[in-house]
Image (cartoon, rainbow, N blue to C red; front, side):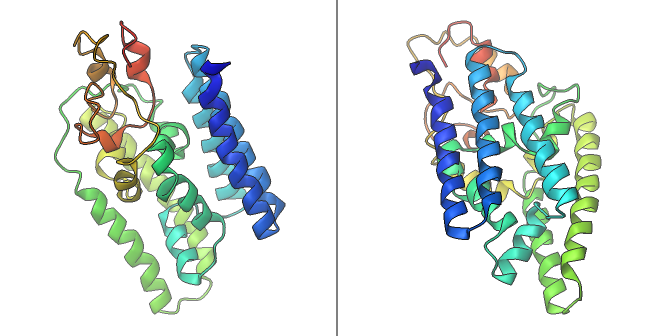
Amino acid sequence: MKQYRLSFIMLAIFEAVAISLWLTKDNIFYLFNFSYIGLSISLGVFLFIKKFKYARRIVQLLVGLYMLIYLGLICQENMQIEGFWYYLFTGAFEAATIHYAVAKIFGPLIFGRGWCGYACWTAMVLDFLPYKVPKEPRKKIGWIRYITFAASLIFVLALFLAKVGNIERIMFWAFVIGNIVYYAVGIALAFAFKDNRAFCKYICPITVFLKPMSYFSVIRIKCDKEKCVSCGKCKQVCPMNVDVTDNSRKRLNGTECILCNECVRNCPKKAL
C-alpha cells in the first residue's frame, strides 16, 4: 500500500480542510466542496500510480468543470482573481477567498503549482490543444503577468471607490467575460508560440501568488542522480520548461512545475 501513500495524503489534507471549514463556518457546502475536490485529486494520483495514461486529464475535467460550471455559472461565484479581490474588500471569508487561501496562497507550500496541472479550468481547455510540448524556446515576457494582476486589482478597487451599485452582479459577468477572454487569448498564444501553456507562462495573474509559495513546496519532482543518464528526455517533454534534473530549489523555472509527471512517465531509467 506504500505506493498509494501520496493518494491518501492528498485525500487526508482536503478532508481536514473540508471538516474544519464545515465546523467553523457551520456550512455543509464546504464539506461537500473540498471532499469532492480531494476525492478527485486522490483518484487522479491513484490512476497515475496505476499508470493510466489520462489520469491527470480526468482530474482536470472533474475539478475544472465543477468550478467553472457549478460554482461559476450556476452558483454565480466569481472564482477568478477579481472575485478574490471583491470578497477580500468586503471582508467576507467565503467562496473565492477560501479557494485562493487553500489552492493558490497557502496550499502551494504543500503541493506547489499542482493547481495549474490538475484543477485550473483555463488550462483544462488549453491542454487539449496540439502543442503539449513547447516547440519554441521560452519567451522573456513573463512580466506581462504582473500587468494583468495589477489590472484585476485596479478594476475591483475602482468599482468600490466609485461606489458602483450591484457589484456582485458585475462580478458574475466579469467571471463570464473574463473566462471568454482568457480562453481566446490562451488559444491564440498557444498557436502563435506553438505552446499550450503559453498563457500560463506569460499572462496568467494567478501565478503572482503561486510562484513565490511554490518555491518552498513540500511535494516536488526530484532526480536520483545515480540513475540519471542525462538523456534530456525529461526536459524535452516538460510543458513548463523546468530542469527537473536539478534538485535545487533554484533550478531553472523551478516554481513553474505543475506536477504533471510527464517527466516521470518518460524517464527511461525511472530516475525521477
